[in-house]
Image (cartoon, rainbow, N blue to C red; front, side, top):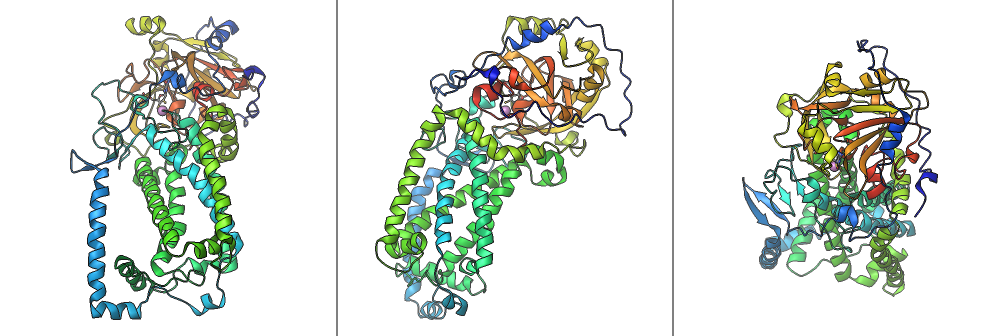
Amino acid sequence: MTEPSTVNHGGDGEGLPHAGREPTDPPVELPAAPDSSVTPHAVASFRSQLSIGKDVVDPSTWAGSVPVAHGIAPRVRVGDSRWFNLLWLLPIGFVVLIVAVAAGKGLRDMTSVQHFIASYPGTVVSADAIRHPGLPVWVGVQHFFNLFLLIFIIRSGIQILSDHPRLYWTRHSTPGRDWFRIQKPVPADPLWTAKKDSISLPGQVGLPGIRHSIGLARWWHLGVDTLWLLNGAVFYVLLFTTGQWRHVVPTSWSVIPNAVSVLIQYLSLQWPVENGWVAYNSLQLIAYFITIFIAAPLALVTGLGMSPALSTRFKPISRLFSIQLARSLHFLVLVWFLFFITIHVALVFTTGLLRNLNHIYAGRDATDWVGFAVFAASMVVVVVGWVAATPFTLRHPRVVQRVGSALIGPLQRLFEHLDATPGEYGEKDISPYFWHNGEYPDSPEYTALFDGHFADYRLRINGLVEHPVELTLTQLRALPHHEQITQHFCIQGWSGVAKWGGVSMQTILDLVKPQPEAKWVVFYSLGDGPDAGIYYDAHPIEQMSNHLSMLAYDMNGEPLSFGHGAPLRLRNEIQLGFKQVKWIKGIEFVGRFSEVGGGYGGYNQDHEFFGYRQTI
Ligand SMILES: Nc1nc2c(c(=O)[nH]1)N[C@H]1C(S)=C(S)[C@@H](COP(=O)(O)O)O[C@H]1N2
Ligand SMILES: [Mo]
C-alpha cells in the first residue's frame, strides 16, 4: 500500500485564490469570537481518528462488509400501486411478434399493399448516393471505438442505477412514487438508508458488480463518457466535412412510407433487397438517425441534468427538467441503445453477414472473409476488455480513480465556479420524504451528547485560522440566522428538497478569519464511516463563501433529527450529498488535504474511491 502522507493527489493544495466576501453583501454584526481552548493538539486529535483506506477491493470486506443483496425483476408501476413485472414482456412480445408476422403476411397478399410496396420499395436512393457509394475506413474505426466504449458505459451505467434501484418522474424520491424499480418496496423502517437499498450485480454485468461500488462505477461511466463524446465529436465533424452525412440523414419525407414498406416486408418474412453500400433502407436510416442525432445528444443532456452544480445554478431549467426526470430519461436512452443494439446486430447477421462486415470493418463492397477477419480480431479486443474490466477494477481501484478523475476532473473543476443564488424553491416544494443515508453514529461520545440534548456539544474550528473557536449550540444559534430551501443530490441517485436553517459559512469565515494559506476546509464527523475511522470531507475554501454554503442545525423548521445529522451538518449545494458531512464535531482549515486521512480528500474518497470534486 502507498504511504498516504507522501502521496500528492493532484497538488490540490494550490487551489484557487480565496474568494472573499462580496462587497455588495451587507456587513454582518458578529459577536466577538469566544475565548477558545482550541490548541493545535485538538486538530491532531481529529486527524488521528481517521483511518486510511485500502488500495485494493476485497469484495468480502468492501464498504463495511456490506452483504450481497439481490434485486428483483424490473417492475413498472401501473396506476397508484400495482406493479407490472417486465419479464411478462418476453411471452407477450413473442405473441405480438407472431401476430405481427401473420398481419404482415396478410397485408402482403392485398393488392393495394403490393402496389404500395412497388411504389415505395423501401430505400430512397439519391443520385448523389449513386455517385458516392461506400463507407470510408474512418467510419469503421469510429464504429469500433463507439461499440468498445459503450460496453463500459452501459455496464457502469447499470451499476450506478443499482445503487438506487428506483426511478421517479419528480425531484421527490418518495417511496411508492417510483415508476420503475428493480428492488422490493421500501421497508417501513424510518431509518432505512439509501445504502441499505442498493443491490449487487453479477461481476460481468455490472462494472464492477459489487454492491455500492458507485465510486468506481462513476469513474468508468464519466471517464469513458469523455472518450465516447470525443469520438462522437470527431464523427460529427467528419460526417459533415466528407458528405458522409447523407448516409445517415433522411433528406426526403418519402423515408416515412418507405420505412412502413420495409416494416411490412420484414414482418411478412419476404425481406427487401438491401444495398447498404449505396443507401440504407428507410427503416434502418431512421434508426441510425435517431441513435446518432437524438439518443446520443440526449444521453449527454440528461446526464448533465443530474449535476448538482448545474441544476443549482440554472434553477429555472432544472425546475422543469428535474434531476429525476433527467435520470429517468437517461435510463430510457439506455433502453433505446439496448433495443437498437439488439435489432442492429440481429439484422447485420441475417441480411448478408459477410458483405455487411466488409462494408463497416473493411470499407469495401465484397462478399469475401476480409471484413469478417477484421471484425473477429476486433471482437477479441472487446471480449478481453469486457472480461478484464471488473477484475482490473477490484485489483487497481486507485488507477481507476486517478484515470477517471484525470478524464472528467477538468469538467467538474469548471462547474465548481458556479455560485448559486438563493430562492426559486419555496415551502411548497419541500419533499414529503427525505431519504436517510450513511452510517449512523453509535459511539459513547455521541450517545452521551445526544442524551444530554447536546448541552455539552462543542463545535471546534481550528487549523489555519487567526481565531480558532469552540462554539456551543447556543452560541451557534446566536449567530446571524441563514435559511435556504434547496435540493439534495445523493451520488446514488435520489434527491429531495428541504429547508435548512443555521449559519452561513461566510459568517464562520468572518468569525475565524482563515489565513491566506488555508485552501481547503475539512469537516469532521462524530460518526464513523462503515469501515473504520471517522467520516470527514474536504471542501475548497472558495466554495465556503458561496451563497448556499452553510452549517445547518434546523431542517424544515425543526431542530435537525438524529438521522439527518443532529446537531449540525454541512450544506454546500453545488456538491453531491456525500460531501454534506452530518454530525459535525470539528472544522479544520488546511493548506492541502493530502496530509489528512488517506489523503484523497474525504472518507469516501479514501475508502470507496470517490472523487473530491463531485459537481456532476
Ligand atoms: N458523518 C456522515 N455524514 C454523511 C454521511 C455519512 O455516512 N456519515 N453520508 C452522506 C451521504 S452519502 C448523504 S446522501 C447525506 C445524506 O443526508 P441525509 O441522511 O440527511 O439525507 O449525508 C452525507 N453525510
Ligand atoms: Mo449519498
